[in-house]
Length: 81
Image (cartoon, rainbow, N blue to C red; front, side, top):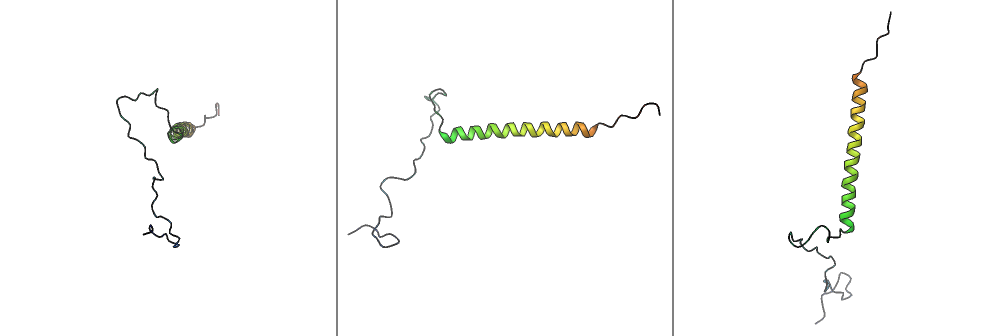
């Protein structure tokens, strides 16, 4: 008997023998050091995104504090008047 028939009736199998997605192996706490672990592309990009976000937050805080300092000061009164 032939395998399952696909949506277009061509007799294409609905399931593949090998999975399409590779599942990551769980990391073991012992036996894996930081030096031997080579980060994947996704991990490197995620780290760069976190670093960029921290830097942008610092810049935003610095701008906010600079604006507050300018707003808090009053203009100097003219002397001798």
